[in-house]
Amino acid sequence: MATPTTTFTWAVGTMDRLLANGAVTVCHYTVSASDGTYSSSAYGSMALDQPEDDADLTPYSDLTEAWAIDAVKAKIGGAEKVAEIEAALQAQIDVQRTPVTGSGVPW
Image 1 (cartoon, helix red, strand yellow):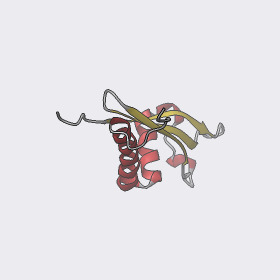
Image 2 (cartoon, one colour):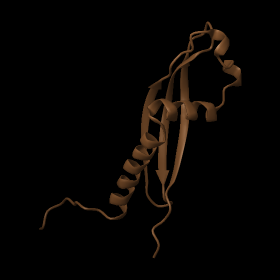
Image 3 (cartoon, helix red, strand yellow):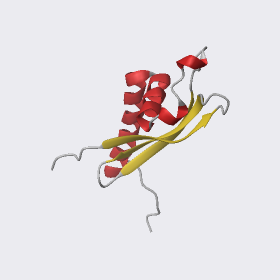
């Protein structure tokens, strides 16, 4: 039987911003992994760099979740760190699928 494929989903639940110019200062994100039977997830917050000139800001109303996810992934360390996070979630699913520890009593 083939090992199920795990799907990873990145999402941004909320963003902190400056009201004066709409600059996003922090993205609060989740990464969820599921193979259809088992799942795992992680949560994080990432402070974003601010441009020196407000003219370089994308208007807040024009921002998308895709923009926010890309900003988080870039700031977190790029593809290498994204792969590390997803591998850690995959490892948690692997342990759920094939447990390596147990608990209980023999009587």
